[in-house]
Length: 258
Image 1: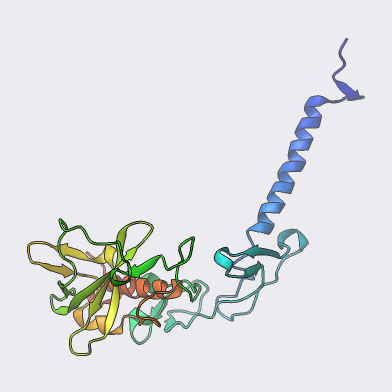
Image 2 (image 1 turned 60 degrees about the vertical axis):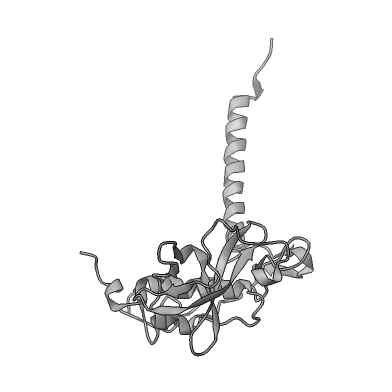
């Protein structure tokens, strides 16, 4: 007759239960180690002092990742701290107190205007070349003739004033859509990029309305280091500037709706 007991009263069901408990504890320890590869060590909200790194069971061993397209390697954790240039002050001394901008709120780097510090290189295609590029540098690509004409259209801000004229469209060569509008500002001739998702193409009026900013605020949109490409870091900063405008472009936007 089959005997389900290994020894004494220790049977198969008990073995499976204890094995699962041991496995589950090991899984939790593994996940807690792995989720500390980035974002650590923690920093005190007020003093800036670094919190203890934790014991051996809660600190991941360094692991090196090979970046695509021969862009080198990165090893984490490396205890490297971000160096944000925040133009803001705390509203109170308690932990977790909100920040309020000082100076130009669109450049404060907080709230909807916050951004991540990304690589200072453009997003690349698998076989080389930039993923996002102006239409003038993309042979074989064109805008559909049935769509409203965005190139040459006037751009108006939230105040209705003219901010500039669209001189080119920057396209995503993998998604086949417009990512940014290149706008030439009147007077200075300076060119800035505006995210296409924030642009309202008004066919009836023949213009493009961007409610995120006042017309005068387009002058401070972060500039590109290279007029023909945009880096990952510059994408963050451009998007953050327009995101900040959704809350800080006018004083009344920070007030309650009711």
